[in-house]
Length: 426
Image (tube, one colour):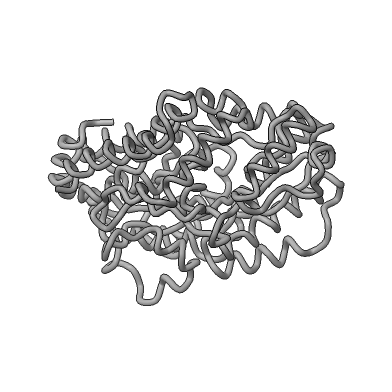
């Protein structure tokens, strides 16, 4: 990642590209993440349909690997060859928006267009009065649990609330010798633990972007995770290995549950058919307000684009109900379109799958779709949110390993974040 000052200067200097010819003026460049080659037919059909509705325009589609999109986009910004529309995750999009690198879409959107989308998902693409993103597809996690381990631990179903987890984790460990769950504290991995803090009633930041987590709720959350680890109720590797390790442990029969998407079942049925046969899906763990987390993929328009209106029109076409439903079915994700979600839920209720395995996947997808009713982006895409996660996780690691008590870890995390925030938001 380029230094913040250089990025800000580059973005502030973004004007339109120099004197393009007429053909270039009628072409929009669209970047997506990790869709090719599996979704080539879908994207080619959408592009073909949109071009038929917009004679004279063409779409140049480029698919970019997830791991390199930030580097490639920043390089394109500096070279003044940024795409007109790009598929980004919320944290990076919010970071660009905060530095003036993205178009405010408000004046380019048709009146009332937000009514087409799930309200909480649409709001996740805002920064103050700035609408910097159009939502595309969504994913939610459900709890996949091993019924054999549940039975042996004395449970018929996994817990629904975080406050029930300590007793459950102790029962699983004592009666089966396995672990109940794996939530990583590796700074650059899953945000599940940070999301759990929000579910426990923790406000992460205040209106000035200063640490609000140094609070009674924050102290309880830090103590919750520190105590679970020190009591030996979490795998030792949570401080050194990421989410992939949770999948490995579950497939090996060493973990009672894992938070994941419905499609996990297909891989499980291939990699560990015995475990898959004992696996069922349950609602995700939640907290005080029963809110689950939802992950959003967005479409944004870089400030450099000289064809922003056409880019927004293509984004709205790509995310209309028809195209979102088609993509959700093919990619087995969830749509941000309200109409498409209703249609998807109807289809998922139309009878069981052809095999027991397919029926299980379909039930998990139904549960995932229903989860959206109580889901929101629990950790807003605040600029610097990855820094916040790194600070919180690093201090929690120290507390778990006994280098500091949980209250001291919380105070130090707040001090480090505020030092960063005071420099970024004086």
